Each structure stands twice: as structure tokens, then as C-alpha cells.
Length: 281
Image (cartoon, rainbow, N blue to C red):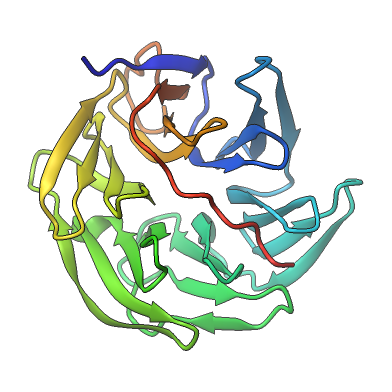
């Protein structure tokens, strides 16, 4: 029987972006609208919270230590000693950062969206440690979950209002050949953050769906994990063996949030995740 546990009971407005940091043996996650970067050590239960000066869409480990942050006005680097500097600053009125992911080559793929979720108001961009930026030409409304197949040849991406999980061919030159892996049916919620496991299956959290789904590489739905929070936002494997599935949730926009809305949940022994690269910058 599938069982969830509460890793961190919290009241995050918009929890997002769980990421296992193997060097530190801890999970990173953010509260976008609360402007907080959280850490959680499952071995000791130790937690930390760092406040940012802007809405923060994602926080990922860097190869040399510290974090790369997807912020409202661009992407910044936080050094281990707390020093901050912009890697790429691009403020656009009415737009904020959203989810982000590190590719197998160590680059960061960062999503944005407008606060009013205006169609086509977001972006999906690739940033290197040297600060070079390439922005995908396809229109984006809510740039959300991104992940790669175990061999790195496929990239999965969610633009939430489309209700699709899309897949691209991926190599050093970028992405191409966009097609649909899966469509989330009406009434089941909207696809949000995602992760890819060692079998190449895609796990996607469903906003307003209260669940995480697992799709096989050919797009077949083969597993559903119901959860006690309607706004599940993202998922990632963590723990020493990358077998525990961590899931972030949100309270934002709920007239009557449940007791676990905004908490970090975990499903022990849910599967086998892939090691996530650190940002090469």
C-alpha cells in the first residue's frame, strides 16, 4: 500500500522545486511567494530557512558549493559564505521566476511566468555558468517542470495551462522535435513540477489534482499516488539511495487550505531516482 509521510509540516504559500543535494545529504525546496529557501536533513531532522529579497522560483546546488537561484529579476549565484551576485539579470515588470532544473551538462533551464498568467508571457531559457543565455522560441505561459531521460537524449517540459507533458530531442545544440508525451484530462488537475526516474519514467505533480502520476517513456500512465493536499506542485527523489519521493505543496489560492497544504511530504521507497547534476557555475 502506498503511504505518504510528513517530512516537514509547514505553511508554505507556494512550495516548489524539491532537489536532493547529495554533497550535503539534504533536500532543498523553496516557497516561491514566501521568498524562502528551505533545507531538510532527513537523517537528523535538521531544517534551515533562508529568506531571499525577491520571489524565488528554484534553488539548485552549484558544483563549487553554494546555490544558483531562479529569482524574479533573473538568475543569481549565492556563494557558500552568503555572498550574492547576479549571473543574468533581466527584470520584466509583471513577470516572475518559476521552476528550474539542471541539465546533464550542468546548465540551468529556468522557467518564468507572468503573475497574471497571461498567455505567452513566460519563457524557458538555458543558462551556462559563464552567463550565456539561450531562450526557447516557442511561446510559454507557465514555464514549469523540466527533466531529462537517463541517457540525456530527451528533455521533458511542462507548460501548465496546456495540460501536457511534452518531450523534446536534446543534445549539446539545444532542443527540437517537440511532441506530446501525455495529456492530463479535464478534472484531474494541471501538470506542474516533474522528475525522471532510473527507468526513464516521468513523475509529474498535479496542481489541483492532489496526486503525483508516473508515466512510462511511451506515455502510458502506470501509477497514481493520491495525496492529502490538492495543490501538489513538484516532486523529486532523495535520500541516500534516491528511493524516497519528496513532494512540495501549496496553500496559495485555496479558500480553505487543508492541514498539510504547504507542507513537504515524502513517499518512502517509491522508486529509484537519478542523480541530479549540480550547476556548473
